[in-house]
Structures are given as structure tokens and as C-alpha cells.
Length: 270
Image (cartoon, rainbow, N blue to C red; front, side):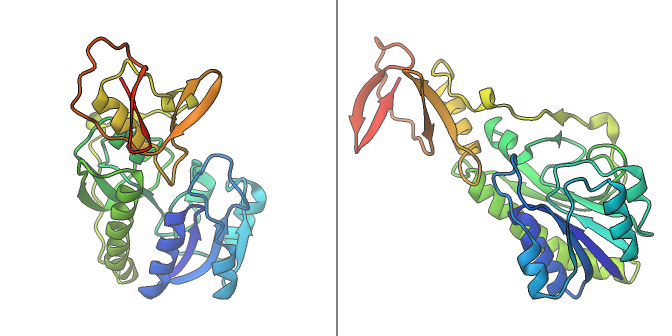
């Protein structure tokens, strides 16, 4: 079974390595030279060259040039893991088994953008690692593998990212052989249950000190590394916040946003 791999983030590299480790025949790779919107961006060319795998920088994966290059490698299946662009019909129709995508959420719930960030920011206690056959919609195709993942109060985006990656690599280890011997199953999504998260904007990362302490804490955890960090504006300057904790003092007569104390080289804000 000939696999063509598409990806451009840290998770993509981990998934590519696991696909090869489990015996997948990766015949070609498409990646990006750089990215302005993926803070966990990863160029896959170095790994591909070391393993003698042809690699293409495909800024437009649906262009005629990309389609021609991909078609020449005659893939039986395409793995598209960590690619923030829709795959169009012409590319979807190339491999006989289809294009398998990845979404770190409990499909059909929580389709769309920034699923790890939104899950933590909204205070969810569960998410999932989901592989699915891509169609012309967004995260709407048949599921091939899904594993539920608990979100603990101590999790931030990095720890949840790592937990999802560990689960996903185990799933790849199981479904690649199933694809090879044609023993895999497809499970249709219940579209009536679906919702879609929107693209995060810069304003979504700004701390409003009128928010509850829980909401502020969740926002900071959601945007911690590998993402860009939550922030606040003070005297026209932006300051990043990478970690917070809630303390018990009430400071009842202080207004939201006021620095009320300094403890252990950190500021206490109402």
C-alpha cells in the first residue's frame, strides 16, 4: 500500500515517523517551507531527505502542479495530518482508498479550527483523537479511528497536545495494518450533532480582567506553548502571560485589572 503523506506541524512529524515505523510504505511527502499561522509549524523535508522520500513544498496543495506531482506517485491512500487547508475534490479522488485526515476533537462534535485551544478555553473535561476519511466538507467524513481523552484541571495546551499525540500514534499503529489488509471499518458521523468552532482571532487571546478567575486561567492554559500565549495590554504595551494560579484572598475593594500584591516575583491581579 503506497502512502503519500501531507503535513506541516510537530504532530505531522511524529505521525510520519510512526507510519514508517509500523511498516507503512510512504512514497512521497508534501509539506510547507514556512507558516504564518501554525505556531507548532514543522518542515518535514529534512526527515524526508534522510529517509530518501521525495518531498514537495506545496503552498497550494490543490494547484495543478501539486495535483500532477502527487498523481505521479500513484498513492493508494493519502494521510493528511496537520494541514490547515481544505482538500478539494480533484485531490480527494486520486487515491483509491481515499484521504485520511486527523482532528483532535470528538467528531462529530467540535469540528473546525483550533480544537485544542477551544477545548481548554471552554473548560471541557474531555476531547478525542479522531482519524477520518476526508470529504469536501470540514471534518465531516466517515471515522476510521477515535479515542476519547480526558482533560484534567492541570492540563494546558502542551500537555494535552502531548496526550493526543501519544493516543494518535497508537491509533496509527493499529489502523495502518488494517488498511493494508483491508480489514478497516468506517463509521458515519451523525451530522445532526455537529457544531463547528470558528477561527481564533487576536482579540480572543486578550485577557479581560472582568472575566472570572476560572475563565482567565483556562484562557492562559489554552494559549500556552506551543501556541502564542494569552496577553493583556498595559499602557499601550502587550504583555504575555504563560502561567497563572488562583489565590484565596478576596481584595473586595479593588477593581478588576488592578495589581494588588506581588508574591514570589509574580504579580497578583484582581
